[in-house]
Image (cartoon, rainbow, N blue to C red; front, side):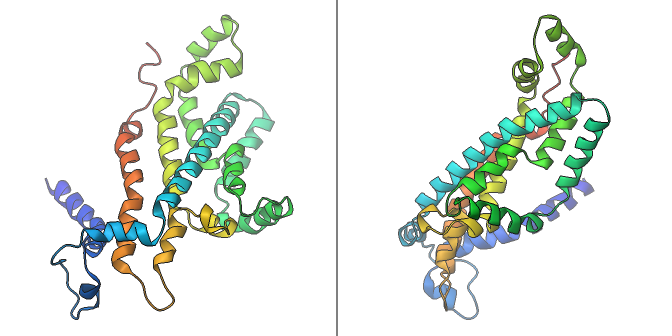
Length: 266
């Protein structure tokens, strides 16, 4: 009971910023300028959400982000299982070196790669397009590769050996046996990918120059003027922007709890 109370208090503390954003989204412009600052919106301004999408085309930015998240997820689904399965099943010093290189790539921070990547994409003329944000996903993500390596390492070898006796090659085993039985892990990877794309601000700011290509996080900056911030509209647009991610995590919560291998040996 004490542990539940402590966890409840911690959850409440982490919910305070979201609660404050929710209350601010329903306040009027006058309430935001009142002194002392009003806590409860009286009366609630429901039209703030309509005003938020009229001032800034958040629907377009949401669709842009959804498209980007879909393409990046496809890239991770293509590259990460291939790399993880190869690294798990390979043997020898070369395989050990590749696994060590993957671990080393995981600890390299993005700012260290930011300038070389930008110069590369600028030289090939891909700046101000989505390609710099999509192409790296088709080359793999060290975090997800290491995660899938752990999943594939616990996979029963008997199923693979049986498939080999039937004439199946490594690609067939991966796509028809290993990946279908690892769907919860892959779903968790996709959910984390969408969350990462949705929260990314630095990479879209670096590569996207056309406002028509902006993502949700970049679009939110239009509510900030040189001398004034429309906090009620900004909070309303922020709440609208996180709804797709909340729905995704509500649908994918089983993937975070499931192992994907519970019935593999049956």
